[in-house]
Length: 296
Figure 1 (cartoon, rainbow, N blue to C red):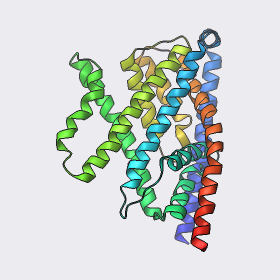
Figure 2 (spheres, rainbow, N blue to C red; figure 1 turned 120 degrees about the vertical axis):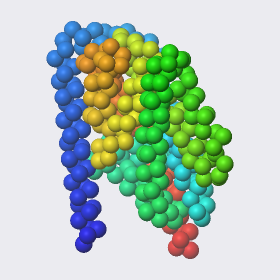
Figure 3 (tube, rainbow, N blue to C red; figure 1 turned 180 degrees about the vertical axis):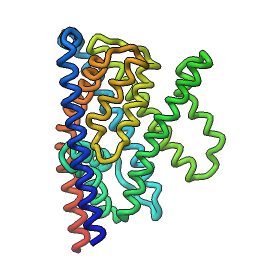
Figure 4 (cartoon, rainbow, N blue to C red; figure 1 turned 90 degrees about the vertical axis):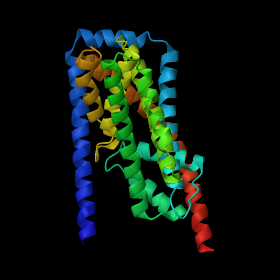
């Protein structure tokens, strides 16, 4: 009974999260529409932008997906007894679950946990712990890079030092567990950099180019917004987090920053609709094979 109540509460929170996210998206669109000239200028730049920039933006989404896949592989395959999830299988799970998190009740995470339990025998509690670890590493990477950017700016050092600063941890990685978590953390650092490039491109596409440190700082903000529970993929929250801080960090007006982040969201959806749908046959086949093996 208690478990049923907890499930119902989670569903209610997810419904509330979806409502809040969609309301924030609607407010962002309304803000952009009200901006008048700014919105018109952004649209003009977008219409005349190079197709190579759009291709690069899709490439950034692909790299981010690859990093998420590798991070989840490292965290999953370190479980005891050893589990060996294949790369192809994990990337299909990530694409399918990300697409699932765009719809009501966000079944993506639950589906991924159920798949691992059915196919690999991973206990639900272990899969939940892995998901928490993955999310925590995303937040830690964002905080680490953000703090590094603040320190390098104050010390008048190159922003590249903030990206390379995780290498300071290498001498302390003496145990196997520490090296495994460090590998996952370093992957999240690379993912944050890919987010920075993605944001840099979106702002350039709407005619508001920003420098690399500002793009990287906004990437930290976007990644932090993505970790908020019950709001799938940070819908709405990410747009407004970047929108509110872009004037302070990059000197870009709120409406333009919202337009840039919404552009990134659209490209993200364009990427994950075919990627997520293409992943389903692979996962379905894997489930069918495992069920036959269990029956035999």
